Length: 315
Image (cartoon, rainbow, N blue to C red; front, side, top):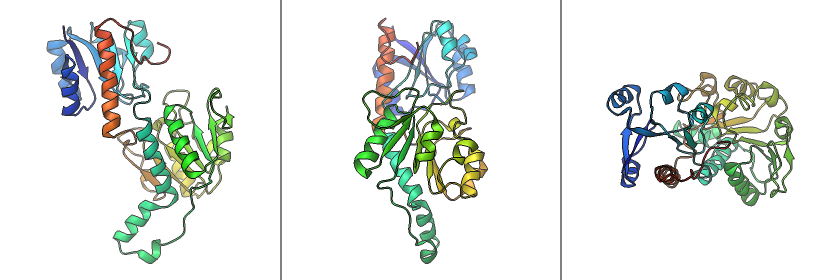
């Protein structure tokens, strides 16, 4: 019997076809009204949900689906899913670790170079005929110290590119040192921030990391350093970041994620030294294919009564 899957995030027609080809019955419900109509007819049919970390799935939503047994987060993030509530209800939660690490790492180095070398400003200035005004020197990336907040799959991919391609010394913040890494490790994020020329956050969202990059952390950084966030928007205090750039206590910043997506704080938009992209670091055809394939593998394991392929940690 086909599993009925409720999808509450955007999914291309190509990926819808791929999931359906695996014998899954899809119910696309990106907006609340569509979901309401679907639940009128299929509330008792739906056994699985597909979402993403920033959309999540709450305990109240779980309670509307009496046969729900699986929640699949497409991609590594699952911070918006009430994992504790799912556990209490016997619902399995899975995610997609490592599926977009290489894509995010590529994008991160692009953001670093764009910010440090002032590439967006150069492009914008040329389009306005301001050759002389915008033609100025900018720092090199080669040999700069990279500070990483977090050392998961994405951070490792960034570190490989930075160390191997740009001869950048690496220092990282994590709860525990990684036995297979020789780079210096710190358990205090400020110790990493004060040493970094380029500080990159790959941290997940949640109470433990909320506004970790705040006024106090930014205050210990070098005035010619930059901050890049490709983890979760809640890690950065947007107003503090904008102030640090505006007051030239920080040379610039690059952000792919924001506190209240899709809204972007006006203070960030007002600073030309802050480069921004709309949460696209993990988006590539290759990465999206990989995330969907992992969702399918978890759905098939659930259907066949096998253990999940990639359960979230602690479940």
